[in-house]
Length: 353
Image 1 (cartoon, rainbow, N blue to C red):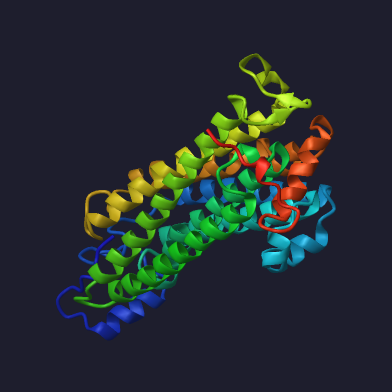
Image 2 (image 1 turned 90 degrees about the vertical axis):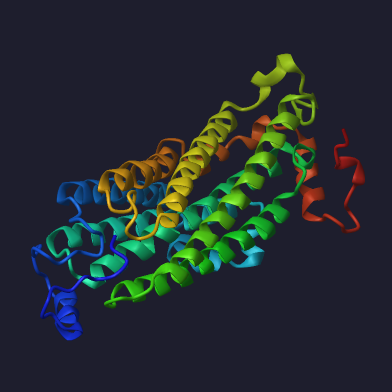
């Protein structure tokens, strides 16, 4: 991407504005905002992939008969619903957070497809940059919800933090990262539309938002690893007794597959975040940002893997119906977790090393 629009000799700002509002093919001597023309076939392919993923989750949502939840997704994100531990509430949270990611990615790649035909159109450029930058923020929130659901089922002893704290702490971090990236993206995009505009302040703000989100993800990953340590090294209870090294098969296989999906998604988002950080630090005329191949492989492809793995390893279907494999002690742990700090909270539920 070029950090400013380079006007040829004799072109005025008004003429450049007109160019950016219409649909004109590539003109010699006039750079696009990308510094290249996005490939049409690639844009269509990614639109199809994310669109199919969105459709798949929509169908899965319907199969769980969550019509109202899908229609009123914002209501499912209210704090009382978000902290509820029921299966229906968990399905609302997971799908409400996954579907905006797929929708945003589809819109973003539609913008790049539009740009392949109208490379100077500013609306197409803004459409893709805003959606593709912020989409992963919703996705990481979905991962936090999934881990919270597992903690509810495997007992409070299986985690340093309770599900409520995961929701409160990490979702707050995501909201902050989202706001910072959106503000920075808006500033940079506005300046990129001007002749001799300065995109550096906005770009630095965007980088700060991405780095902040990465830091939160690092902490989350450490907690997930600790969660696994507690589950597999005699820190959780299944079948009415402590789990020993030879008893790992007692953990429902659905949970194991779900954890695999979470780690794969985290790894993909880490790769994407590192790429985006380096890309923006190089500036809007840097090597990475002006070569489409890196964007396709390190942003588009990584997000496809991160998102689409949950079409095959659907968290709601993997969590649903597994409670009968857990003992009543687990249900008691859930009740204790709901009353953390309250009169029913039992400190004996906390693990000490």
